Image 1 (cartoon, rainbow, N blue to C red):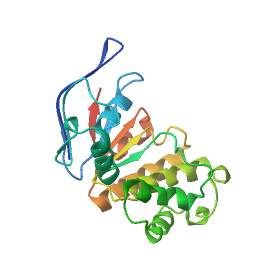
Image 2 (image 1 turned 60 degrees about the vertical axis):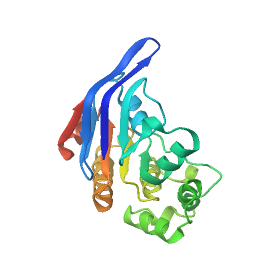
Image 3 (image 1 turned 30 degrees about the horizontal axis):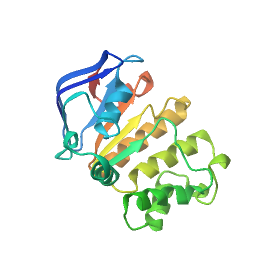
Length: 208
């Protein structure tokens, strides 16, 4: 679960976030909405421990992230939080399967090639396993991005504008895949978006 208390964040002397309290229970699915510049990505980065808030408490999976730093924070994030970035950020020198296995390796977990292949099959991209990032489509890259976020079975799954570069058909497929995978893990899901096409899929919303 996620619990924010008295959270504020200031950037260049301008307050970009002010959240008195907000909770997302385990297994819940939330949309994080707001106009450009409202702080959606900033809040996601704070929830993931990629950015430290100016003030306030951030609890994720019963761990106070505001009390962690350095290697302890990196270790917690790699084991408990799956991040679906807006851009996939795949390593071009590794094939798609190895890009997935890198998630295990980076977390210090046993490498799980069978799980990686199963995820690729579930996301209907098993055929790209031995291909390189430059050989796959935008839609395939985004599904690979989802698979990588799931490799360590996170308890919290966050997605930053996951459908912004997709057409209508792929948007529906991708948001449904993200929701289904979160449900299977009983992971708390938070999706930051300005894409009105996906509002109908997730009822709970935090408006910034």
